Amino acid sequence: MRWWVAVVQTNQFGNGDLQGLIDDIIRAGQKIADEIEVYIASGQSISAELKKTSTGLATGNKTLGLGIRTIDGGKIGISGTNDPMAWKPCLDAAISSGKLATSQEWKGLPSPEAMEDRPPLSYDPGLRIDADQASELLRDMIDGAGKYAVQVTSGSADLSTGSATIGNSQGILYSSKKTFVSVSLETIRGHSTGYEFDQSTTKITDPARVGEKAAFFAWHGESGDDVKTGAYDIILSPVALSQLLGSVLLPAVNGRNVHAGRSKLAGSLGERILDQKISLFDDPLIPGALGSTYWDAEGVPSRRIDIIREGVLGEFLYDLKTAYRFGKKSTGSAVRSGFGGAPSIGHHNLVLDGPRSAIWYEPAIYVNDVVGAHTANPMSGDFSVEISNPSWVKEDDFGTAIRKVMLAGNVFDMLNSVDGIAQGNRAVGSMLLPEIRFSSQKIIGV
Image 1 (spheres, rainbow, N blue to C red):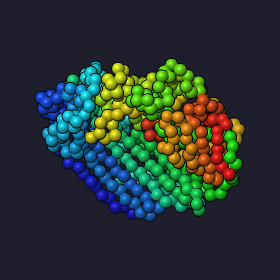
Image 2 (cartoon, one colour):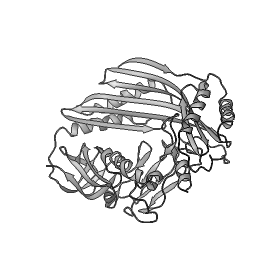
Image 3 (tube, rainbow, N blue to C red):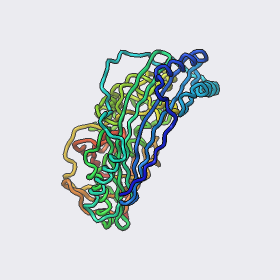
Image 4 (cartoon, rainbow, N blue to C red):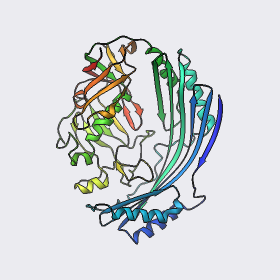
């Protein structure tokens, strides 16, 4: 395996005083706005890519970015820059954008709360962020893929460490550190492809298993049986389940969508909306989980949110802006997609739970992944998706592969026909999800 290493570096502070910089920005901002918030994110990463198994590219990257949010007369402005020393024009841009915003009800940025020293939730100080570590992960995946007669087409290994600091004119100054590792591999055999990945906040313990699963799906799917259109029991993998939850259920519990008339669940608080086997909660305090945090992206202390408990809808999700607009209270659900973007409603660690049982006791169609979940109707819940790597399964084993088929139905109806929830959860991004068996789902085949 040959390696070319490129390093990209952004503007840096050097040894500048982070707290002093934030104080300077806040003092200047208070002279021209009611409130001001400063968000600074920095990080270091190494990304390695495979082209088949003989050539690799590793790219190192150091980032540093600043985001400023101002509130004046209920008007919110925001701006960002990757050169924190250029904070003065960034502040001016935030003020200017706020002048164009529509004024809304605003009850203030959060004040600091007593937070004793706590260990980082998603940080491994021993994680090595270097090309050798990435190379080792790729080699292990290739070794795992060698268990089946397939061709590796691409793969990647990414390792990163970063920190985020938020300060505001109410006195908040919070900082957190995170580490992140991800690997993925794609394979092919004939016209059949296989893909697998893993993610963690520390070193991935079994990258060879990732390669083996990617190879298995390509090898197993090379030939298969046709399935007639009809109703079948299915088992959704955590990956497939995450696609449908993210496209339909999460938008439905977003407070902004609820009050804008874009959620089927508006007016359903306290009602049973799903199978009583299902509980869905956001727990931001799980050690080692990808989305764990003691506070959200606005400095609101985070807490467990029981969105659905035994099928009953318990809470919607809010950030400050939406909560103030509609007379609610923030649930600590603000997230950021980057240092320059405005906070928005999201989740930290979404967990689906319920009574666990054996789910492979009778034949079912296994849905490893789906294509087209983004086309689902978030209001009605209706969807029609192509199944990736479908197969018959029974008694903890994959049987005959299935040729190309589609799964169609309604997400809310599906989640009311749960036939069993498997032991264990898998991390899929910031979701922790099990395999779930559903009865009598519509499969479109031949």
